[in-house]
Image (cartoon, rainbow, N blue to C red; front, side, top):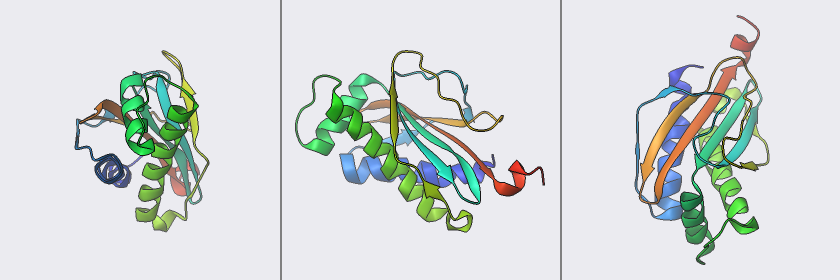
Length: 158
């Protein structure tokens, strides 16, 4: 994955948290993620396909998920429930959708969001390459953005 491919996703996290949640966000240092381990127990996942393929994961603590859902739903959420899970999926969808708009050269389609929960859950990225991982510190708390993305040329070995 080329580092420049992650920039639209970074912008999308900042924009989504600012406009939809009224929260500031500050990104940390880019690193290679561990495709087998998530730091937090809730992950919103979106698949990408087209002239590039991959996956976007937004990994959240329960606290951040409940705070984000409370803002989106305009009703305080005090436990992880279906509404919170749906809100996490919608956050992942908004982030992937905004990034897709900046990556038009790849004619991307995005999947419906999936949400995985549980301590130490695993997310298998569709390539042998580890995802790029970026921590964010937000007004709602910390989160991780993970993106595994490869163009058709890379996948074909060109």
